[in-house]
Image 1 (cartoon, rainbow, N blue to C red):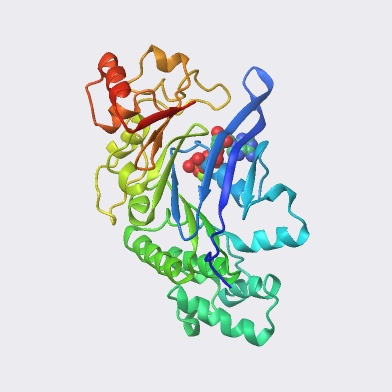
Image 2 (image 1 turned 90 degrees about the vertical axis):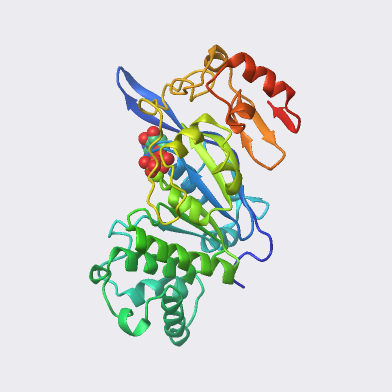
Length: 354
Ligand SMILES: Nc1ncnc2c1ncn2[C@@H]1O[C@H](COP(=O)(O)OP(=O)(O)OP(=O)(O)O)[C@@H](O)[C@H]1O
Ligand SMILES: [Mg+2]
């Protein structure tokens, strides 16, 4: 059986990932790339993970793929801690959770034909015989819109970026996955090719009940494909919720600044994430106190510099880790902290979790 009809979840539970790095003036410093993140992806769901460069998206994605281990916390697949799977369970996990990386021209072996690249997982992960492999490779290339007669025997070097990305998708699908983690999988493609590849991915999702984690710099991609959006800043989730809510009425100033920098709601438009805030993302070696975003937040008060904001949960399923989430959601401004505090307390349907 392929796809995720059985309700399997892939989740990160309070995951931290630190790296020892060389830092100026210190021999060894600790860099916290992911700082206490919980995130789960359900059956046939598309979750978009967005945030500026360096926010920890790929590090989280690698852990959810089992390519890297959390320093603390767990990755849970189908109710089991991925860190304690036995050999057979691990093989199954690696088969069912596949990745499509950004095409760098190097993710496919140039010495192998397209057909052979797609055939590898069929032989090694599914153990199909030669005849069955041949037929399946043809079907998979067909699925991603590459006529097998034309493409089967070609080298990846002879393909365009969009065609190579389709081959990578076909290769990921060959293992009959339930989850695909797509790390900037369509970011390098131009607008029209990107739209075609996303269309293919959506169609496949419907027919196979696949779940996607789309890691992207590109809010156009998020708009086109996501059911749910998760926004990361400096190793933490600052806002999460249904895409229809978060993209229209963000409740965190960081999300608001990302959207302000990318105002066009046209799904075919290319809107790369460049936040509408000043300065660079701070170093994850010495993150700011209190709310990590306070050093760049146009709305920050003294409270933000000293106190970590609790996640405010909204009735519509979204949440925002901002002291003034309700006001940001309401689009209130210019900022006035006394009004903000009053509105936050007065607002019904909102609760704070420490
Ligand atoms: N192996 C590593 N060793 C040391 N630091 C690392 C390592 N991998 C990632 N980092 C650091 O962790 C932080 C998060 O990196 P990550 O690649 O997860 O960010 P990202 O959100 O995927 O960024 P981008 O959008 O540029 O791909 C960065 O500060 C990065 O320098
Ligand atoms: Mg990355």
